[in-house]
Image (cartoon, rainbow, N blue to C red):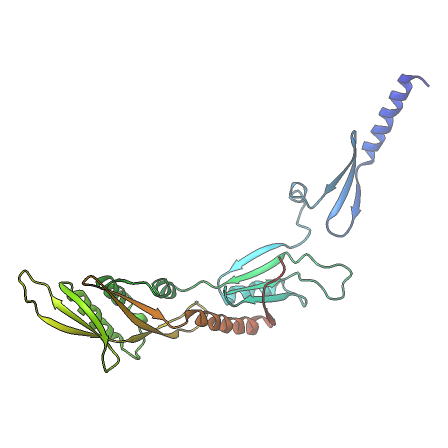
Length: 281
């Protein structure tokens, strides 16, 4: 056989291979195709974005949908969940995640676990305002303005909102005074000693009593009721200037309890049993 004949035969064989098309191996998911190329066999994953986007529809559901309230979570859950769906809650982060295509217990092959819906609880604006200032000292006028601006959040006990408003206005009025000390009075209130500053010496001296604590009533998330949280007042005298702060009583416990109430609502709305933890990545 001549060299020319061998070359013609090789070309004919190559044409026959290309005409035969790819061989598709169905390994359930993903599908793999094998092509004959001049340089050898080429294996192609048909689930690769370059090829999957050309299909009429995706081969499976996937992706994570994020919602912000219980009703939206329940709506998506009921549409896509099945008897093997798994749902988890992270109490500290306030996140509920449903793995809609979780593994089937008796199936030969596992499922992908990549189709999910996640409820991310968003703190309310009042909650963010109060927790954002927690344990931070700032000058008396700024403190007073903050109280006045957020008066609707103050609970009736132990100090009603009207009394807190009067305290705020007193702090706003007494800007030309020098504070010297603060003690706890017999009533439990904080007694601040001050002296008025004037152009001449001998300004009037006096005491200003402020409550040791007050309380706020705010909801951490939209899907839960307001919680009553005690706020303990603290003061610092720097030079002669007064700085004030409040310390919220264990707001992290309120978050966890609020998430638990939302979990109960999700279980009632979906019929799911929610596990504490997080699904596999």
